[in-house]
Image 1 (tube, rainbow, N blue to C red):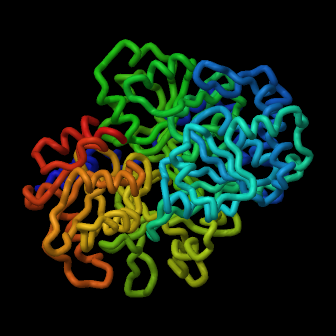
Image 2: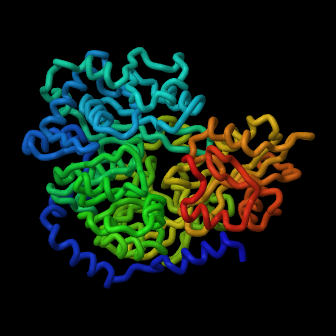
Image 3: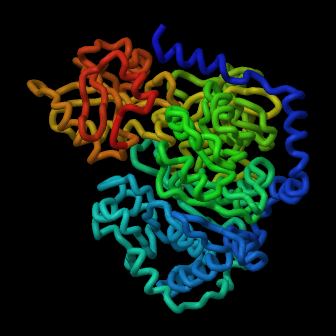
Amino acid sequence: MSPEVEQQDSRQQSVKKTVGIPDILRGVVKMAPHATGMIKHAPGLIRRPPEAKRTIGSVFQKHAAEHPDRPFVRFEGRTTTYGEANRRVNRYAAALSADGVGKGDVVALLSKNCTTDLLLMLATVKLGAIAGMLNYNQRGEVLEHSVGLLEATVLIHDPECAEAFDSIPESVLPQHVYDFAEFDAAAEGLSESDPEVTEQLPASTKAFYIFTSGTTGMPKASVMSHNRWLASMSGIGGLAVRLRHSDTMYVPLPLYHNNALSVSLASVLASGACIAIGRSFSASKFWDDVILNRATAFCYIGELCRYLLAQPEKPTDRQHSVHTVVGNGMRPDIWDEFRERFGVDRVVEFYGASELNLAFVNAFSVDKTAGFCPLPYKIVEYDEEGNPKRGDDGRLVKVGRGGTGLLLAQISDRVPVDGYTDSEETEKKIIRDAFKDGDSYFNSGDLVRDQGFAHIAFVDRLGDTFRWKGENVATTQVEGAVDSYEAVAQSVAYGVEVPGTDGRAGMIAIKLREGADLDPSAFARHLYDALPSYAVPLFVRIVDDFEQTSTFKNRKVELRKEGYADAEAERVYVLLGKEKGYTEYYDDYADDVAAAKVPKGW
């Protein structure tokens, strides 16, 4: 049995197979102390009319008006109160208005984590404009594509992102471009009053564009409306995370990530709590920063939790005040160890996607589940390419309780899809006439297990993307970068499981040009220049040829099944890091990846 299959079996053994009435009752008991706050937020899940005059900006400025002296954001030792933040946000909004930014316009933000990035986003959405949250790991043509999609009126960039900004061609930049210092100067002395438009904006207004990888190989901009964000505030923040106003949520994830911008900020504003922003994640200094920021909660992705567990034990593991963590990708086999080592009371695992019209959240505090969803969905059988399978009657086939299948979210007037900025890309994800004539479902592209009582467990990402380092990696984007290397004639990219890690690591099979040899160091440098670091494949397999099909899909399935362990070892290279590049495969490599020893230089 291959390591990949052993890992899958291990996961299935550790996942909670089903959820029962005792689990629900225990969860209700844990909810009791928070009943008042939960009752306040419950209507937000039942009814959120799109025409309601309620948005992120109006929620934020209401807290600022009622409790101006409460801490709102902490960053590198400095605390900014709600009142102070709101005044600065309003000055920023006035400066954006002066450049013609209004409802429906886009403000592109290219920034690493900092207070300014958060306040610029709030200023943008207060005007009814859309914050285009650019991924600062992107470079060159990928970033050019992303900026082009936004069609922004203004672009504001962080000096810390100079390398990314400098790679954007002037031809796609908007008329108004500022760095932080220039924009602060432009906002100096402007009005600190709340913009009049904020209280008039309907909840259906678009709030953010969050970039996500798709099967086209280039990023797509998924749409987050204020209404969807408000659903996150009510469902995840108010009913599941349940912070008190005295709590502080620590956010080590980038603000272009929905876990930070939607889940964490929504949880904070659900109660008027404080958000603490980490500039970047550091496993060795994580708990020190948590303690410095007096955090009582934090958000995560699964890899973050694994890296924390890989650190040597030290006193700070228990010298913090964190009682709740919220995120996605916590592996069932490390769930108990994580809670016990770090003294965390509640793990609020959730499942969602930037473009998806529903989310699951562990509101009942059940161990080893992605949680509960009250909205309509189906889990269906799928083929080896990750597509929903239809039965003899032409309809999709549902899996039973305890079964594993492809997750589909029903689309209706009550639960619409915001989708992507490109309507054609959205349509590709919609499945029509699934169970009856005229119905429609959004294909999540994810494999989940039905645990009963409207609970699921996440199993895997299907199709032409795989998830690694908390990011979706498009195989066609990786193939494009590999194929542009002069020694490569053709390539096929796919994800493979590495025991002890989350998601799938990138693996590339390549056919070399006749007479060409692979220079492992030069090849690694090329890929690091062409791809975000998390998309650089960990494994490179040299093959003589591929089966001659139009898409190589059948061959990709076989390659994925063989992985790296069953391939000829002398023809597999593994990534040591940005500096050392690729080297020949060695037996302990997978263990080194799981222990976070390699690759270096992410």
